[in-house]
Image (tube, rainbow, N blue to C red; front, side):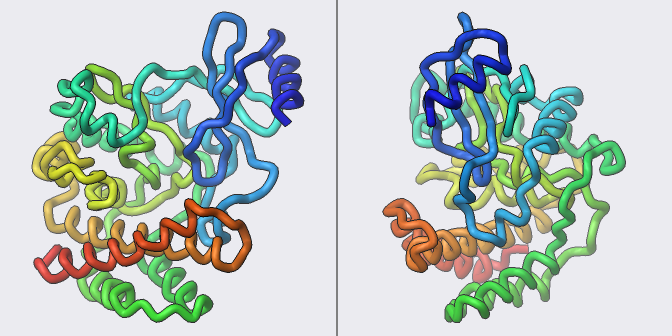
Length: 313
């Protein structure tokens, strides 16, 4: 497969391609790094087979929409990789210099300065993203809170899975839902692991395949989910305070709304973990990684009880 892909890329780019390697990351799209001439580039392409469960596969945008969103985000100052070319089954973009592995971002002395800036830079990046009016965007899924909760309830019913804490969280979310705000562009997976960090701060926002229209606080709350702190103490990506995130974001979302969407994001992550372990248990895709993710379901249940019990929202 690698030789075939190298040949296709070389033909599309008009230059020989070498050192092709697949990278981890991406929910519904493959990511490859390669050398073309004297440059390192990144290929994002559709997989030959789907690796994600139906619920999230159905929400993933197509590669052309993803490419357009990256270009639009770059035009309003959000740090993103530059799109270099469109190729069969995907597109090529520049290879940014930086770190994406969360534990390195949180601990590497060389990134100490970047850590002090990250909460503010994330807030500003998300504010910039939301300056893109929905009527300027390509067609995107609309995912409001009620429709997502309904999908999760239906999934639990189909799995026959008893998850009282998840049911409690869904009821809490329904009972405490804040007044709806106008829909905005939501990245959908804005967190450590999908952010490229350099010595001086945020270099690029990656992995846009779960972008959709939704609540202005959804990305903010997702960034604060405890699982995405990777053991670090601060609530925003392990490095910053919620008040600094909101101040940089610049208005429209208050602390109560952020807290609500932190609960929402924690439940969402728990459902994703549940789906992934069932993907393994059902033999749809046997994977030690997916099996190990099963323990994360209980971690999210613990987090949900703490958040709800502390009066989140």
